[in-house]
Amino acid sequence: MFKDMQIQDLKPRTKAISEMITTYQKEGISNRELEEKIKSSYSLWNDILYIYDKNGKLTIRVEGNTDVKMNKDQKLHIDNEISKTFEKYLPMILSGKHIQSNEGLLTLVGEPILDKGAVVGAVFLSKPPEELRTAFFGFRGSVLLSAFGVFLLMIFPVYKVAKHITNPLKDMQSIAMEMAHGNLTLKANESYKGEIGELGQSLNYLSSKLSETISDLKIERNRLKQIIDGLSEGIIATDSKGNITHINPAIFDVFNTSKEKEPIEILPVKEIWEDFDIVLSKGYAIARNIEWNHNILRVTICPLEDEMNEIAGAVALFQDITALERLEKTRREYVANVSHELRTPISALRALLETIIDGMVTDEEAKKRYYNHMLHETMRLSRLINDLLTLSRLQTDSISIDNEEFAIGEIMANVAERYSVLANEKGIKFSFALPPEDLVVMSNMDLVEQVIIIILDNAIKYTKAGGSVSLYAGLESSSVKISVADTGMGIYPDDLPHVFERFYKSDKARVSQGTGLGLAIAYEIIHQLNGSIFVDSIPEKGSIFTFTLPMTSID
Ligand code: ADP
Image (cartoon, rainbow, N blue to C red; front, side):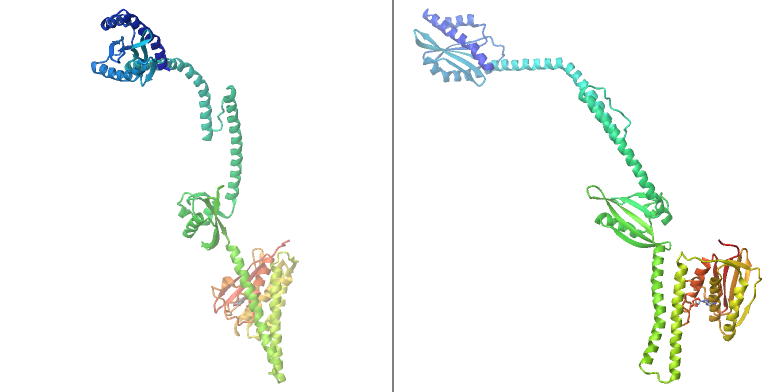
């Protein structure tokens, strides 16, 4: 565009020069005079003028007052460049054509010199490249300068407007950051006009909703913490790296440790930590039983997953199953014992019956003996079943016991009378000290009699001929004490704590006729009667079984 302007500038002047030359040539002026005339009238122009004759020979070259300072070499170089371009167009002008062109940075206009319609030469007017460049850069410079001016002018109002918009936004941003850090007490300014005010309202709404949700979550978390802390089972939770994140107080009771200790001291079982590693790496639950301080603990470790189903940690539950295990063991032993006790008489009965059926026993005397054995075994079976029923009835909490006031001496005398005969038969010296009449108890007569019989029966059973058994009673604070002492085989200290257990027999070969349930029944009865029963014994010397009964009313 700039170059087009140059051409428009050069065009009329080229035309004028061409016409001027025609006029002067008509007057027969020499080239030298023509050059002088042109120079004098042309010195105002910043262009370069070239005049060629009709043979294409450069006759005049006039340079205008260019601002560009060039040395000689530069001038020559440009001249050559321009001449080359002109020579390209010269034949066209000499054939009468008008030329205007942009050759690179060079702008040129060419005009034929006419004399009576015939071409007698050519005029080129051109803006040299340096001039052009200077002009161009000058233009660019002025554009830049004005742009800079506009920039300087605008800087303040733009700054003002930008500040007006960015300041509230900055406020909102800092409040949002504070909220992100958990400070929800701050309020955004809602008084700004337009969208920024609305943004402030939205931020405040967001913060109020957030604080509501957080407070709900806190309440929920505290409730959960109370529940977990109140559990009797121990709980340890870890993060995905196995670092402890939560422990409930029950753990410290179980392992007798404190919170301040290292993880391995808090939970001093290496296997559990290994289980934690497996659960965290494999993602499945593991359960195992461990023994700790004579207790059996059931440890169940489960993985904890986040929303992305990634393992975020693990939680271990420690349940004390000692009582459960003991109960299960007792149940198993009970079933085994009952089966064993039932099998013995049944096997004996079966063997006796088979012998009779096979006709092996022929004489009447032997048959009678066999029947006697069978009767004996049947009675043993029935005794066992009766004992089992009695025990199970006593262990049922719902049984009701009718109590009455009676003198303990009365029952003791009654039993002593019967058992003195038995003792004497066995060659055992039996003694009975009748207690005073005012030794009265509030209890159940039948059950008390049953207990006396059980321990008296045992005393006679486990005392050899020549020994002695005595039955006596006494008073101790508000209880009546009834004791049976014997000089029999006694009980070894290892067996002593177990004699009141079901099916316990210190005779490990179990050849004795007893069921092993007698003392268990006595123990249950005495506890139902709110008394206590205990034993003192020295092996090979003898035993003293004592039970107490409350004297006063127990309603
Ligand atoms: P059993 O029917 O076998 O006598 P008990 O429950 O009455 O069953 O007694 C349990 C065990 O206690 C007996 O097997 C016996 O070993 C021991 N025992 C009980 N009383 C005496 C005693 N007076 N002297 C020695 N041992 C006894």
